[in-house]
Length: 197
Ligand code: AMP
Image (cartoon, rainbow, N blue to C red; front, side):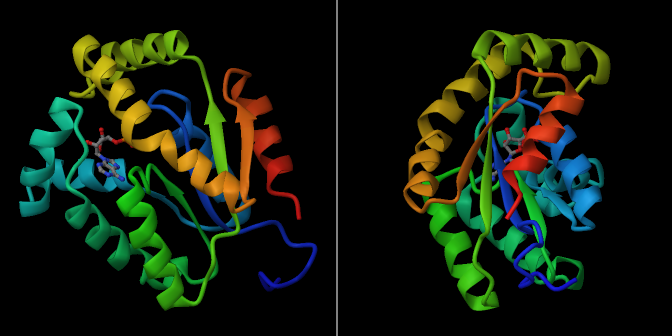
């Protein structure tokens, strides 16, 4: 079905929310349902770190400190990923954009591709809960940026640099808020509803 069909769900999507809100889990579920790629900048960085590429070596120091990788690096990475054929009919960006400069860069990329953004999904969750979730994930998965100090710092970086994006997308009328504190199933159902035409 073509993405211009009026009854089709939105397919050019972003998911935003604080670290630990469940973006990765939900992005994978929604992307599978819509048969579009979930593009997680965090995952792409982690792949590069584990393969010890030049990009990975650069990204690792920022990630371990809970800081954002510089915009120029991140924007170039996303530009080439969005140009891949599997993203032509839709995509779900997870963890990008995270700064106002990245919003502007993404606007430029999408203008070049002739594909406007359909919807921005904001996964809301309270800080105490997400911190608990990330501490548990750190214990279970050993993710190197899930330590108490880095988790706290990442929440602050989100509040300072990423939370302002909400207003930008809200003013464009494409933001939808979803409660990320419910069960995984219920959150997916709410996101599905938020994507209805
Ligand atoms: P995530 O898996 O989305 O929590 O990302 C893990 C880490 O990767 C972040 O703390 C940043 O260091 C880096 N990262 C991921 N996405 C971005 C982005 N859009 N801009 C800058 N850094 C990012």
